[in-house]
Image (tube, rainbow, N blue to C red):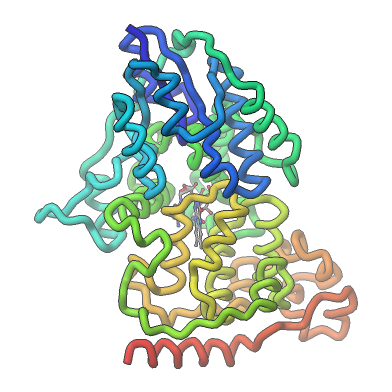
Length: 436
Ligand code: FAD
């Protein structure tokens, strides 16, 4: 008999247990559905990245590409056959799959994670609240070996809708800037290069936005071009790098247990917190014109490349939540619109971590100082000058403090929109008030 493999966030052939399960039943129809609910909510860079990777998969296997609500499209294609998927664990994905599962027999094998969300539990069967305990149990539990999917799987030719393919092609053509190389092979090249050249120095280099010392695998991991289990099979699982993979798994686990934490405070402790909605200041933050060089560099890196270094994600998120007193979902929404690795679990819980409403024992009163952070992690100012050309005449760390130079503003760099010391005090006062 034959079956359907419905690809979503697992756009690869290698190490794909769901595809393997489908192939074991006989010839497979490989399906991708452009879901308007996801597509219409995504910015042009995200669309281009998704589209390029779907088209890349279509070069590798005969992929049937359709457009429409999966609840209608999938049962039509299945026509009574079983539909294989990799588990989707976001709130939207779960709802959608539940609905599709009412109309077809959905067979779920594997997930985008080494250990599926919900599986790591403490002795009483409860989820872990804190990362370090989760990571220990995660490692102890372990994960299966990579699945051996055939290199040329037996997939039957299907009929794509030209309209759906056209949407994807147009999205690629409309990419607002150069994106990373798309596809499964590019993902593996990236990983292999990092494993050779970057992995050893990673613990020391990972916090340096000026050095390009991280793997840049997040856009690939997000769409499942490679599976984290494939990476873990090729590294020391007690390494700093494996620990970062564990963060990704932890946040997916948290979201699985508390889907509401996607857009609401995970911890109820700050319910009484007073927030502002300063439209002009939020716009300055979005466009990278706050007058704080490291914040502006990060926001422009996001705007012009669809990615931002982790250290700078923390600094820019802290600036919005603590210096501008804006509730974190406003920032999380903006990041999700622009990031090509934008992931509701990692992003929104990353925001909650910074905002002090999240999983961490981390206190709200940790407020990042954007100037000292900049000087510490971008000590020569190279990162700032790369993204903020109005500061490219200021040498070394002077780029972090244009207000200290006679010529700091000669290229029309904006003045600081707020005073960090004042806003830090204000943030702490609001925090005290909210805690009663
Ligand atoms: P590396 O340092 O090479 O790390 C390897 C992999 O580990 C990453 O690709 C990622 O999958 C995972 N990882 C690393 N750090 C984290 C972390 N703190 N949380 C979860 N996973 C992690 N990551 C996303 O994938 N998507 C997001 O939308 C996202 N939004 C974020 C928002 C904020 C406010 C913050 C503070 C962090 C966010 N992160 C997000 C986590 C982290 O910034 C990115 O995963 C990382 O910068 C990606 O670059 P890289 O692949 O070079 O990372």
